[in-house]
Image (cartoon, rainbow, N blue to C red; front, side, top):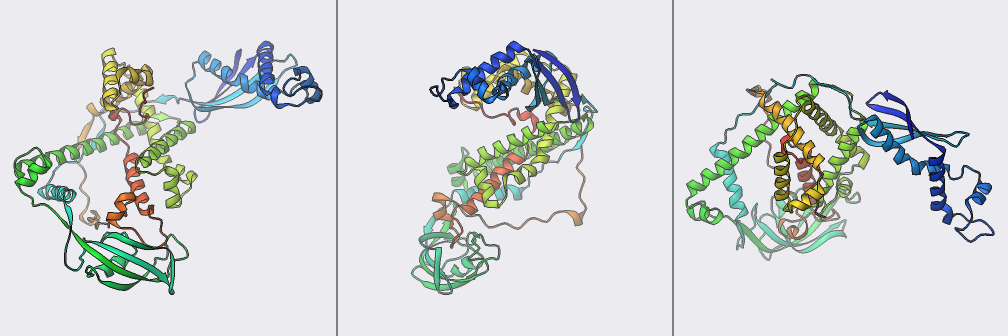
Length: 499
């Protein structure tokens, strides 16, 4: 094989030709014939037994050329990449093929390559870092959350109030006609959760066990089931039981039950310390992300679209994996929110572009600083990954090539170099009129599966899992769309799997 006409194009793409001699092409043609002959019927021969020359005589001598080119293309591409030392990105394409009179095949390729980089400033960068100040109010709020998680639901003999759980039977109708999905028995509805359509829960408040009543509500204009949107409905409600959420007292006994501490004061101190640690990590993460973004903005590099597309694929893969932990999938989530896959791809493109730019600038810095991980650092990284994923060291080494480990360590060290040489500045104080107001607490979204029976679900044809799907999807989206700081190491790689 001979590589010819290597030319650089815009957006970090390269075109080149690979000439395959007649012998190589003939071998590929024969391979294509052997692969396809079973699909070709020739009268007078058993299926799959017709000689190549007979088939070529019937369909033309070029009948197997395209398939032969497909056979040779991977080998020809890899040969050119190795010979010319190209670092390719994404999936290459054969843009043309030509067979000479001497039966030599020329394949013309186009591929994206790693961009050439001119670094700008990456030392001495400045960025604001938030001050961490955990208040007693924040500690109290966290303790209240912990109390709620350790509460118990008990039956009470009184009218239902907000935050109570009413166990109800209901049946809905529009114009006197019941509709599908509008009936349930023994349903646990948390009053004030916002799980049902507006006005429903408010009218259940005040009901006592054994009481029945009719309530009237109007479905929202944008309701998921079009046949019910904007319609007035009557629900017959029977209250079977009223239950309240009883929380434990905030005292030393509570501290002993939920922690290893003997007193509430000790436990409060530990909660404050944990909140401070979390806040410090978040402040560092935001500070580091701002520095990396600056370093990326300061460089000059023509990042190819293929690199961004790869990052989009990675983001979507992460989203799908995260959603599947909640019993969903990215495809199902997009169906719920009414967005198609292409639109979603475009929505995450800015994040993908930032990721691609981060990869490029960190690697360029690692090259400029001649960063090379030591054998000890590589072995420690293998050990850390094995511990993180609860795998044996041997299985991790089989799953992750040393080159991948070294590449991650190089970029991590490059990021640390930026951080160590940076200056943290005071965050700017927003004008009083511009400061955001504290958002009102949103009602809890409806839970799915077993939890649905505890939290309540919307009547009518709204799918039982839909609100929970949105909540789970949003939670997963927040997790994956908030990019982790580069020092996290394994942000962009899939978790290794034992063989």
